Image (tube, rainbow, N blue to C red):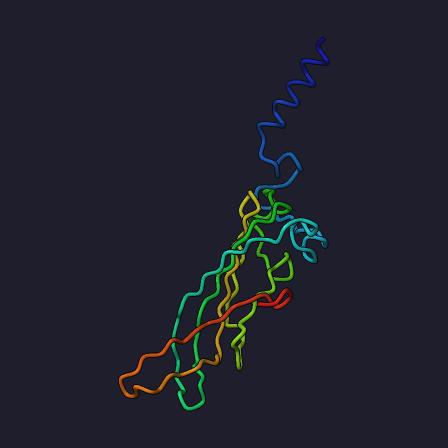
Length: 166
């Protein structure tokens, strides 16, 4: 009976501890995701991963109506859930794009696009990923100049999957 009480006390103590402490991890220790997490999308045999997308304009650098292009600097924010990452060990990691699976989303109307000077990846303890990157470059657009000089234009940033099509 005494052994059973000791075993129950140990189990109760472990269940009250955070997951990283149960695994013997220090509060500031980073646990890198496995190689399969980096290569494969979540639930590879299941439904498509729903990815939230937001674009934030930083600067409109130029409009070139005769060339039907515009120069832009913007931030792209993607968010999704990856249940394989729902552990505490990622909280103190400085993650890079090669550390986790990323949706292959690109700018479809790009002429010349390059990544900017920052990328940010945050993963919460439930496996929700927030990925942000800065992008600069020239994008194409169809300009309607019939009412020039009193015209207005729509300058689209067209995003789509580079793997599965637009």
